[in-house]
Image (cartoon, rainbow, N blue to C red; front, side, top):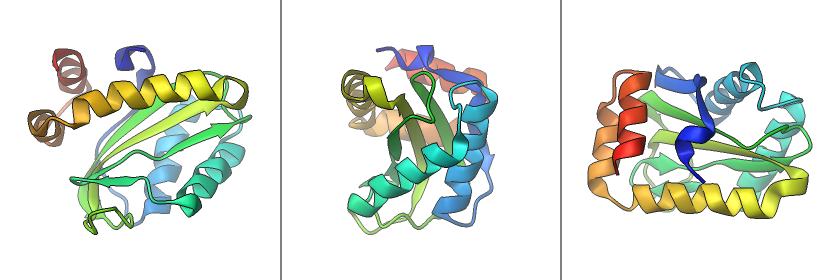
Length: 150
């Protein structure tokens, strides 16, 4: 699955001001709702919160990949935020996050779509160069170039 196929201008937040994990997720889910990815934002946010309670999606290196399988999701989607200031996320390495990739998949298509998106993201995130470029993007167009390049 190509990341560029599931991310839209409405789901990209560069310089997002959020003081908490919850505030960040609300803003990003709002973009997913505007883009037509979500049919019910509240149901989706509840699924994401439930997943976070099972274990943090803060994977380290200042990156979090929160995700939710939910009936509130109409079609697989991805939101990206580069936070203006790092936010505490209970990350595996104990450090706050500044790059957030929010994944939404419909409950009925959860297994396949969810795994494909995570694999596509993971292949990029293992590269320090990719993470550095993501921290440096200043526009949606630049973001799309970075996602396509590596």
